[in-house]
Every structure is written in C-alpha cells, then in structure tokens.
Image 1 (cartoon, one colour):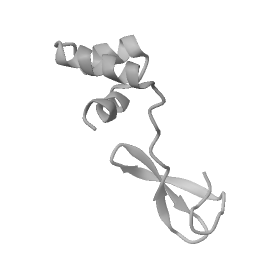
Image 2 (tube, helix red, strand yellow; image 1 turned 180 degrees about the vertical axis):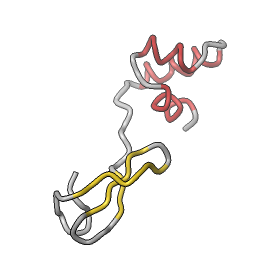
Image 3 (cartoon, rainbow, N blue to C red; image 1 turned 135 degrees about the horizontal axis):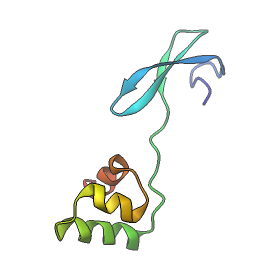
Image 4 (cartoon, rainbow, N blue to C red; image 1 turned 90 degrees about the horizontal axis):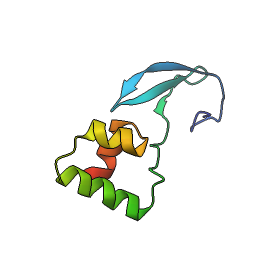
Length: 79
C-alpha cells in the first residue's frame, strides 16, 4: 500500500478513520487510508445473510456462520 500521491512505500501508522487504518507518508507527510475491502460474497450469500438478520439472528451470529467479521456484515446488511 504505497502512498497514493508520491508512490513511496515509506509510511507509518497514523490512527483510525471510520474503522479503517490510516497511514502517513514519511516523505510528504500525506495522510491516507487504504481502500475499503470489498465483500466477495455471491448475491445468494448476501441475500441469505439479510434473511437471517430479518428473521432475528444477530450480526455476530451471522458472522460466525458466514465466517466474516461483524463490521464487514454491516456493510452488506445496511447498503
């Protein structure tokens, strides 16, 4: 994950923004976050997760069944 401005690979961690790790370029002192991870589930799997949620299953429970972290599921359920 190189700096999007200068392409430098010299960076350090610089906190969190919206649940994602932020980085700071050591050369230009530019702060950036990595791109949001895409949920690679099929539409059928997404629909199953939505159905499970609407039937009363919690997000943590769906995450255990689906094998994903709860914050990834929130992106799918509340798009």
